Length: 233
Image (cartoon, rainbow, N blue to C red):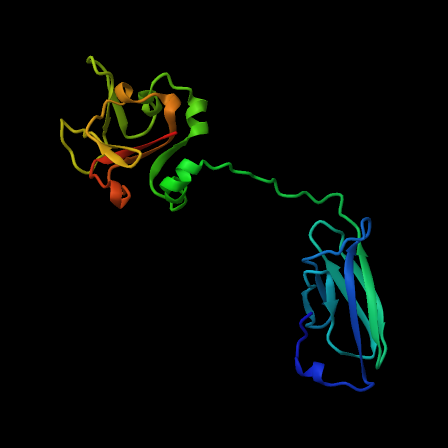
């Protein structure tokens, strides 16, 4: 515990007493970490140690009230008599709070391929893009790669022709081809001159996809129109 004045620690003699102790779970007896203790009516307040132990500053003889608080447990307030020249060693047991609800545990399983390619880092940095993981792709269950882009804002598939649909962007900063432009395509980090996705790719072989419309494409994939980054398994 951290007291209000460190000089108190240096004063000994019989005028003051000390309180030390351990905070444990009442049922298991296990020591509890992260508990907070405070002496009511004073500035003495602080956390117990990682081993559940605590040590209050030297205090004048007399009666004190102190409270112990720990997440997931019922708080406990006790009245204690400080005896001059003596150290009291306490064992404080806390009871679990049956009404306390733990925050849900969220587990994210990451792809090693996408981790190495910087996919998650770019998503964490907040790039204005659409990110598809393998789970997202399987959930959509596209029959071909171009189906991934059918309902994305700012994008349009031009149907027809022997080569299949072609992806164009409508919200590009560099306008060409009658108001639309064709984004760059990168396969596993290498720029491809072929932009007919269904001819060269199978949805089952995709590990992740990133779609950037217009400005804001990461530097190494820069294109004023935008870019589609496809990572294979």
